[in-house]
Image (cartoon, rainbow, N blue to C red):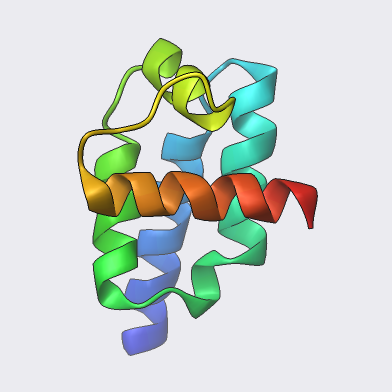
Length: 86
């Protein structure tokens, strides 16, 4: 049962990571594949909140042009950027 809920949640997040902007798709889906399984509950919540932001804001954050005011979201942005260069 737990695995089913985990798969449903992960599938929902994968759908939300598909933004229609190639750069965001690569960064977000790559992070979901590489790092999501190791995230703790707080980071999962922060990642979920991050996905609620509009594409233009996400792109600015992920390219390092702006920094989120929410420290937890800023942490996830750094994790995504780090995963992209790993």
